[in-house]
Length: 274
Image 1 (cartoon, rainbow, N blue to C red):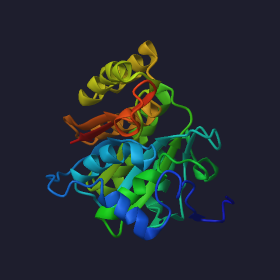
Image 2 (image 1 turned 180 degrees about the vertical axis):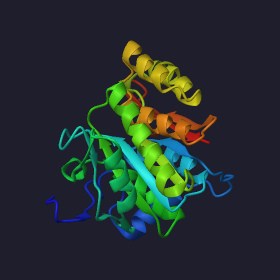
Image 3 (image 1 turned 120 degrees about the vertical axis):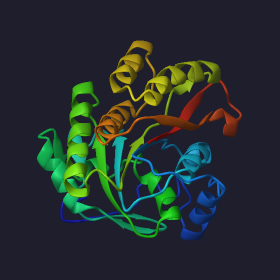
């Protein structure tokens, strides 16, 4: 993607999720919980695997919250492209369900708050971790804006600095209200189901306690292959600065519950921070 090509086309449509409007709408509908009570949230943790595997967890999380007008999406950079922390600061993102504009004022404010964060579209070109969140947001809200952030440098200090920059920008522009922070993360990768669950709940405990340092240390200590621990650290840091006081586990499952293979699973957790 060139910097002047400001429409970010889908990278994984037809792979991670259905590739046409009608098929994707139907797919997402199948994961939504219509009777779920919706609450205002400051942040969430939501998975990003193929929807056939993690869609039930993502659907449960998005079904349980009110979707505001602005969403900051923070995900891990799997591709290695781009800067250490990359914001796509202007333009639009496209899915089969339509286009979503970037909230340029908030993106610019975050950029001004931390020298670690760079305006960079290359990191977003082929990365799926944020893209797969959009169909769920588009299901619940016709018009909203996003700030997409990819994290390649997941060191604790970097992610805390990112979280503080996000919280400061949200406070400056929105008085700390009406913005949802999304940490995109899967949990353990390619472990036996029982081992994955044991490791994952060591990490989840710290997310529920809004303890970013505890999460970081636990992931490192136990070798937990949670790909978005850095984004989770950033979102917890920002959420606490914006007044969050508690978190709730909405749903946990693993890929074996879909594939039938419990020897090599990926774990998925959905958490709401309020």
